[in-house]
Image (cartoon, rainbow, N blue to C red; front, side, top):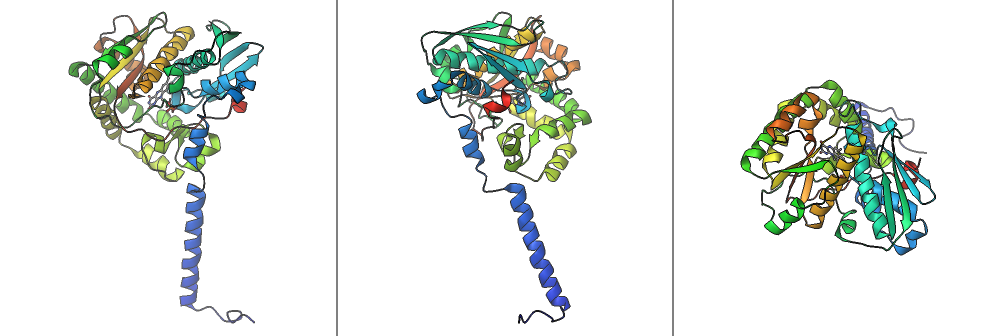
Amino acid sequence: MNAGFGRRMNRRDFIKLLAAASGTAAGGYLLATYAPWLDYDEAALEARSVFEESSMDEPMRELIRYATMAANGHNAQAWKFAVAENEITLLPDQSRRQAVVDPEDRELWISLGCALENLLIAACAAGFDAEVDYPDEQESVRVKLEPGSPLQGPLFEAIPLRQNTRSKYDGRPVAGEDFAKIEGLPLDPGVSLSFASTRERLTVAADAVYSSTLQQYADREFLDELIAWLRFTRKEAMATADGLFSRCSGNPEVPRWLGKRVVAGMKPQQQAQADADKMRSLAGAVVIASQEDEPAAWVRTGQVYERLALTLTSLGIQSAFLNQPIEVAGLRGEFQSAMGLGDALPQLLVRYGYGPALPRSLRRPVEQVLA
Ligand SMILES: Cc1cc2nc3c(=O)[nH]c(=O)nc-3n(C[C@H](O)[C@H](O)[C@H](O)COP(=O)(O)O)c2cc1C
C-alpha cells in the first residue's frame, strides 16, 4: 500500500504540493505560450525556398509563391490570385484590409503592386513574356503569360532575400556607384523618386515621422488595429503565418496579454522618438510619389518600391518603411511641401542603409491565397 495514502496532509505537505503544482502549471503555461519546439526560422526559410526545375511542373503555383514573398502592409497578405490558362489575376482580399491605417485601400493596392513586380520578375526568370492590364472598373490586375526565353538576373535572386529591416542603421553612406544604381532605377509612368540624402532633408523627414507617430500612437483605433496584426510569440505567428511577429521588429517574444499592455500603454512620445531616431541613423531616405491617387497609380508605386527594395538587397543594403507622415491624412500635404515634392503625391517613405538583419516574416501557403 502506498505510504502516502490515508495519511492526513499537514500544512507543510500542502505548501510543497502547491509549489510543485504551480511550478508545473507555470512550466506548462510557458511551454504552451512559447512553444520552443516550433522552428520559426525554418518555417520562414521554407516560405522562401528558391525556384527549382522540378517545381516548374506547376509554373503558375511557383509564380504565385514568388509573388507572395513581396512586401505588404502589416504582412496582412491582403491578396488573392485567380489562375486561368496562361493568365494570373491579382485581386484584393477585402477581408484583410486595414480600415483605420488605410481607409482608402491605398496601401492595399501598393501591396498588390509589390506582389505584381515579384510575379513579373519570376515569370521572366521562368521563361514567360508577360502583359499587364492595370485596374480600372474591374478592380483587379491581370497578367497574361506567353512562352518566351528565361532571363534570371540579380533582382530575381534577391526576391527570397529581401526583407523590411527595422533595425537601426550605422549611418555609413551608400557608395557613389551603388547610389547611381538606385538613383537610376527604371520607373513606371507617373511614379517618381525623391531622395533625401542631405542632413537638412533627413531632419525634415525625421520631424515629420515624429509628429505623425505621435498622432498614430495617441489613437486608440489605430492601436487596436495594429495589435490585431501583431504576433507576440512564434506560436501565434506560425498559427496564422501572417502579421507582424515581434522578433521581426527586434522585440522579444512575450505572452499576448503582456504584449498588448506594452503596446497599448506605450507613451506616444517614446515610439515617436524611437522612429525619428531611426530616420536620423541612416545613409539616406527616399520618398516614392505618384501623379495620381487611384488604384492603377498605387499598383505602379508598389512595383517601383519592390524593384527598389530588390535592387538595394542585391547591393547588400537594408531598407524599411516609415510611412507615418503619409498615413496620417491631415499631415500628408504638409509632408509633400516640406519634402519639396511639388504636385507629386507622397505614397511611401523608405529609409535605407547598413544595419543588422532581423528574423524573416512568414507567408501563408499558396493554397490559402488562391481565389
Ligand atoms: C504599402 C506598405 C506599407 C508599409 N508600411 C510600413 C510601415 O509604416 N512601417 C513598417 O515598419 N513596415 C511597413 N511595411 C512593411 C511590412 O510590414 C512588411 O513588408 C511585411 O511585414 C512583410 O515583411 P517583409 O517585407 O520583411 O517580407 C509596409 C509595407 C507596404 C507594402
